[in-house]
Length: 393
Image 1: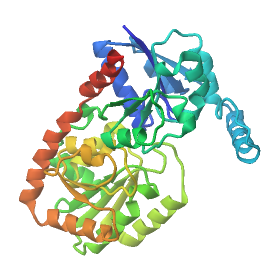
Image 2 (image 1 turned 135 degrees about the vertical axis):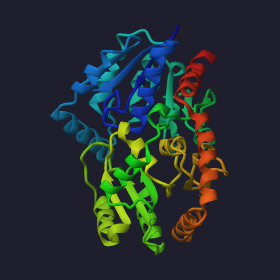
Image 3 (image 1 turned 180 degrees about the vertical axis):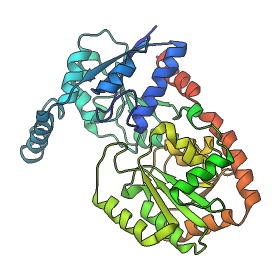
């Protein structure tokens, strides 16, 4: 049985008590390994006392926590300036990865997976263990450079789009590419709620029982197209069409941004048409999905995949998405309306919402197709697909 190590980005803890797409995937993998135990698993995570207590229940996963101190930020700032102004590159740009490196040197590992974060900080890890043992799990639209080609011989991508983008731009002749599609913990989202509870949630949000609700769930950042979605909702003059926005700039962390300030002003200007919850814990999200009628994912950049798509489909929602990166690999044309990212995007989102609002039969058919499509992205399949990557080696 192989021993593999997953190195989290070092921002949010494992298990995923504060959310985070990568942290959620790692937690799902841990939970499945507790059931099937096909690998001996080690995970490196930033320290959190609650997460550490929760990790003690795992039998087949050892989570090693590294604390961050006040001088970590100072160190990173110095490392950045040395590189920018003097072309001096330290072995590690972040002390989190230096501490990780010290952990790893004490272990006998078969495979090491870089799960996001600062990939360039894996240089010494790759040199110590050998490139053939180190994998980059690509969760976003990332292109290789000479430095990364010298660190990683193996890529694991969340979509075929992401895999091709890397391989087409890589000069690494030893490159091995694998595709492992994302998953969610489907048991958290395939729950039903009663009509009474649905109405209670809507009432709490200031939404009427007969309103048509479009839900956006994700980070409130520019590339997610939140402002464009708000503009599209405002074009639909019917007072029964509402937008429910769930999210924050940085998952559960209480951070603010100029973009969030702009979005909040647009929400205030829209009056009763738009409701904003802020961050909602993952285990509570299903109630909000079940209280909506349609999901919108109007990404403006090349989205690698998007866990929210699977959440929406598992909840039985019709989708309105942009033809963005790997997203179209996760949905079908039967469960989604797919739009180009062009100058007509706002108008087209608005027209798509109105189309679904006026056609209940279409909504019901798309809902059924979403439920079918969602079954392709179970956490069990994700676990087995990722394990098979290392079996092939």
